[in-house]
Image (cartoon, rainbow, N blue to C red; front, side, top):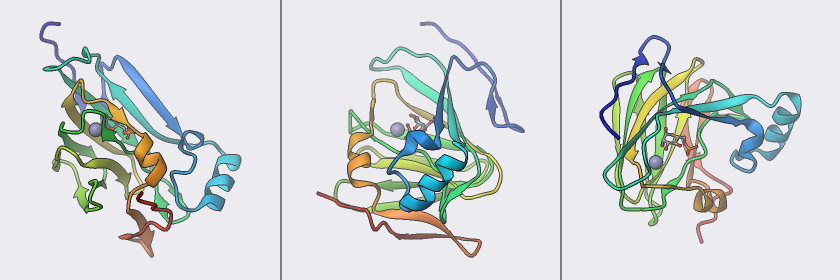
Length: 189
Ligand code: M6P
Ligand code: ZN
């Protein structure tokens, strides 16, 4: 593969020449939100779009850099903001760089020792996700939250451990303020 260019529209957060799109609706996120009742009600009322990932095609091999723009739509399940599933990398020693384009949100990260880091993102913010840290992004605003992610193309997505244990903390809206609280479902084995 040779050099190529693409373009992000910084006003809309849209990656204009994407090759593939991943669509995640509420029904794709069973057991991810803490409030099961609120989740069931929301899915049966309307299976809302939670986020979309607009990707460029790059071979999944060592040395290549995958890059994608994710747009998380505004919304909440109970008091927990709309968010991505979150993952570790299958090759756990690989890092990732996030750049916020539009809106406001945050990224929650945790490692195998149960340490947690939460960093806010506004347009221009860059977050370095260190190797071995799982990562999930959260839209804490009432508009679209868009960011670019760049990562080794052979890093791989490991969703299994997040599905089993969740993140140690939830990112919630408490009377209009963003707060981190302990995740009652967190069952670190
Ligand atoms: C970012 C990157 C992608 C990831 C996407 C959605 O764009 O980290 O690799 O796929 O966010 O996150 P998730 O895969 O956890 O749903
Ligand atoms: Zn990643």
